[in-house]
Image (cartoon, rainbow, N blue to C red; front, side, top):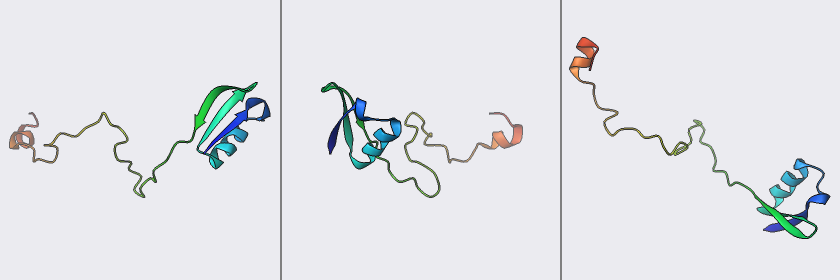
Length: 79
């Protein structure tokens, strides 16, 4: 649902956030002219272990990550 609010009626940010909790989107106006749109962010529940899948989309793990290290790694401590 969208609500239109004149910015002169808002006392502060807490008023805006209170309205946003009740609605998905708020159109802010000044002198009956729209000046901004504020929308709520949908939050997925965070798992109990605190890990958020795909939080960092640019990070990847190589397919061989879990493979055993070569014997020379253990013997010489060099690759």
